[in-house]
Amino acid sequence: MKSAIVIGAGFGGLALGIRLQSAGVATTIVEARDKPGGRAYYWERDGFTFDAGPTVITDPACLQELWALTGRDMAEDVTLEPVTPFYRLNWPDGTNFDYTNDEALLHREIGKLDPADIAGYAKFLEYAEGVYHEGYEKLGHVAFLDFASMVKAAPALAKYQAWRSVYSIVSKFVKNEKLREALSFHTLLVGGNPMTTSAIYALIHKLERDGGVWFAKGGTNRLVAGLVAQFQRIGGTLRLGDPIASIDTLGDRVTGVRCESGWSAEADAVAANSDIMHTYRDLLSTSRSAQRTRASLEKKRYSPSLFVVHFGIKGAWPGIPHHMILFGPRYKGLLEDIYDHGVLSQDFSLYLHHPTVTDPSMAPEGHSTFYALAPVPHMGKFPVDWDEVGPILEKRILDEVGRRLIPDIHERIVTKFSYAPNDFAADLNAHLGSAFSLEPILTQSAWFRVHNRDDHIPNLYFVGAGTHPGAGIPGVVGSAKATAALMLGGR
Image (cartoon, rainbow, N blue to C red; front, top):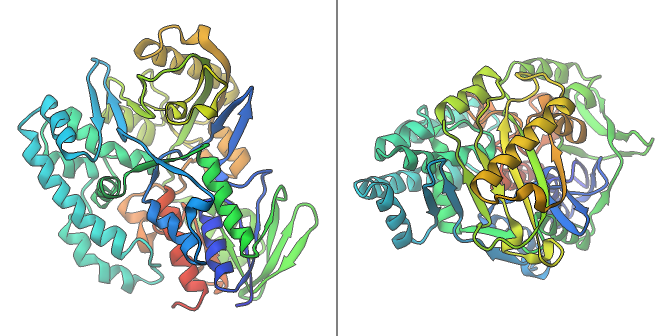
């Protein structure tokens, strides 16, 4: 393989581009939007910098590897700063729980909830270490192209009761309901319902505990800029602001791509970091095998969407940590409303991001940057006019942040805007406005997920949240490693 085109400059596309280019494959990344990053887009408004997300950086080693391929150091382009506590969890009754990898502090926090659960937590950690080894270290960067590879993994999956949910496994070890929520909410960060997502995802706890939680100085957008710098430094080409109109095929092979601008290019292989449904339905509309795949993808379960309120306010808030989870009055019932019933509930849980407590440069002096994010049903389950519903939900979310943390929030706001499911659909071609692609349930994981190489078109590849291993920065960077191995001569 001498040349490749990667569609989409999200984390997965950039990581794959770096791997291919560093191996001597002339690689062009084509991005529809005016900036790279995909879901990790950003805006600058009134002196504030707003990251679209993701904002939780874990497993920095998987990122450092992308510079080490060419003997460089990530620190040349990106400054990562540790975040502690990882998260502060807060419940409506005023209970706070600071989540950290400092064992003594964590035991103290668990003890405040229920001292009897300290021993249970130690057993849960042992379990998380096991699934991390089997599910992440062994399988996280390896493509599942045939059912035999799934069968090979089956004994480990069975040993760790992968058919059980994360919440169910956590509940086996600890009894306090707040602690159960604290140890199971992580799957929401990759689009999974803690009540149905495979227990394998308990590995996230081990991933954070070992690797820490980090923030890129200047925001996640600076990490994206660093990846772009590394890609271009080694000769890669990045084409921005030109949406792909079609992936061209001849027989059972792709030959190149055509853009909406009229620009086209041929390549030995094409890799899609674009939304999987958009890729099969729209970009491969002339391929009969692709349309069969599209039909099967339409029947699958997709992750929820998100409603995000970005706001810049007067004042500094040293008492509000970098990451907070504001739980609502319900946990299981709220998750059922989002994932099963397609209901926009009166109550909600929020993830609050406050980057200026770590890096004041992301706001004008004496001001702070925030976003508050609420999981909401995707547009297939909740087909409403978000232009109408959005302002109502925005006010309710800001009211809740005011009630629990910043009493005079409305008077302090300098600038604000929201990002809704219809924005995910319009800006990212996200099917149903889903924020994380396919829902990470066991029957949509590994071999059951979109394969890293198409089954019928041997030089068409996939990278990103819709393929193995799934969403989240370590997931999509892992998918790039698996896909690059196939493209560079793996099986």
